[in-house]
Length: 157
Ligand SMILES: [Fe+2]
Image (tube, rainbow, N blue to C red; front, side, top):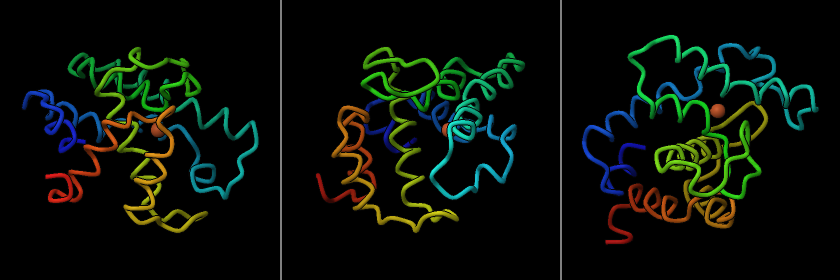
């Protein structure tokens, strides 16, 4: 996330905030049972409803600390929003989703795809990037390009 932020000309202060936010973005998952987090797909509607509470749960938790930045709160609350409005919890669209949140979403999905889970193998970076590029209605293509470039610095230079 920090590399992408740097590449998108964010200030050093914002890049540091972005990194800190990345560490905290899924903190709401502490309220989700491990059995559900590790459950094999497909999830049923009850599972999905419970899992989809984690952004608001995390936001509420972080809101208790006045030292947490607005960026961190936004990232925690909105990192599952998608550009076409089909994400959750608020169904935000396009530019209603801040750049910092859009960076988080792309990097979070990339991380999920390239990580081995009890229910799936890890994908290669190339497979994950291709998957993200193929979904411009969900993920900001400029950000996917910057992530791509940050992983292979010589490819776009
Ligand atoms: Fe999440």
